[in-house]
Image (cartoon, rainbow over the protein chains, first blue to last red):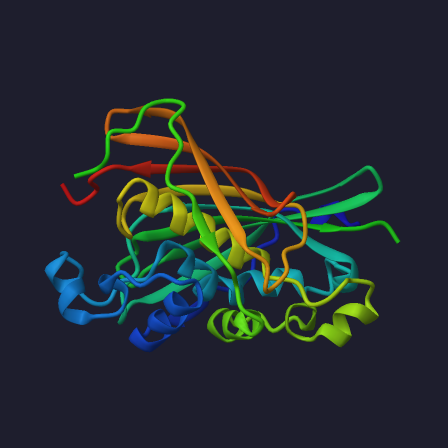
Length: 144
Length: 135
């Protein structure tokens, strides 16, 4: 693996958050609290619009991280890739109507026990420049 | 009001049995259409027993259990880290458990895990939450 690519970052990826996508995602993970489905309930709880569950972060940031995963300069063998671990640190909640810009950086590259580790860090901000989430994505490529 | 949580307490378990087509709905919702999750024949062709659950779906269940466990809301969860280990399968019950590692100053840290029977699909998960975030 080419360790000189450590620190490489990719162009920001923008995602427009919509109510129906929040509802669809919430239903898929079995989250039925009204603030994730109903505008009036969300406003009554102090949100400007229907609010996304925290793990909706994967929906708006995956398109950014994909730029790294699919980068030919890193040469990740997708057929042998496993998602090893994941961390999110949340800031400002994300609501319908927000536009989230996510920038991904190659945080670390290393080999251990014959396996290759590709660690990406994604930082997401809303239209007001507030950080909504910071993700650390560790992908492992098994030995061939 | 947040519940009184003390070090060593267990939060309420979350039990979910994803149906046969859950991976398809999660694929649509998340945008991750990797065929190992939705196509049993493809999965078998690459050496898996069948199509497997998305790891991030399991992580979403851990997040859900943590938030419900502290009677929180969308603002409660501040950090969640997980390790994906065993493969998860549709049509098998998932149990998410959590134990309070630290509690105090309106903040709680949980040690969490998700398993299907003896198959621990998410291990060493750590969730940090604030209680009454709207207050």
